[in-house]
Image (cartoon, rainbow, N blue to C red; front, side, top):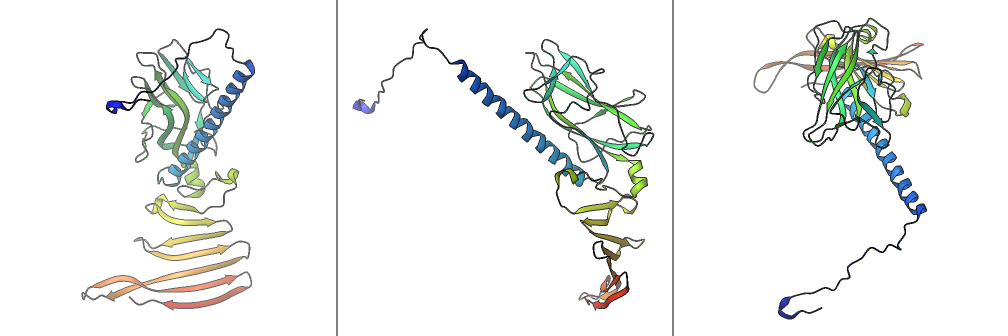
Length: 310
């Protein structure tokens, strides 16, 4: 190296391809196997992340009480007889357009209430894991049993799409289009959250758990809200501990009833309200006391009255 005049020079040797150089077929196979394993791992991770995202949206959604999910690497809910110019790619678990075509359609199978046919469904949210290269496009539709199409906005989770017709079953239809250089959009997973009148009639509640977490063996708290009471929390399930919350007609929490199923014990707390003159000489309606009572199958257990003055 020469540092004269603050200049630095580095020697290098240009590589010239040698026809005698060979690459082992075993080496290529090992590289391909590693790539395949990596792609499989990415697909599984993407699958898990998508499922967790959908469950999180459902848990925090006041409108929906049911869901349909078609995850990555799962073709069970695709109707290939109605789909057109699309194929399933095993390498990344995506659905995309066939090579050389500009447009295509993906259709799901018919989705209906888990409680049976003929039950009205409403208030739809579409959650999608997709990749749309610049210039390409995917348009999503909800198609009812009569063939009526309703456009759905993907990943809009604030307000649902409300349909003023009676929908008892639907398909999700995705219309795909390539860009000018032929790049296809990709769909990795689709989910629809919706309101099921059968679930409402069976439970009278919004967001019942429906055992959707049991397959993962996860112990968790389930919060259940009642649409008829402005989405107030009315039930809390923590394993064998179940709590019911009761409200007055004007929305004040009046009673908390907790049942411990293993011990067959029921605890009831009654909230008492009244007027209180605050420091600004203004009367307020506040919580004054909580009466607590525990009962077993043999009769009353312990009872007490605890007063809080504000």
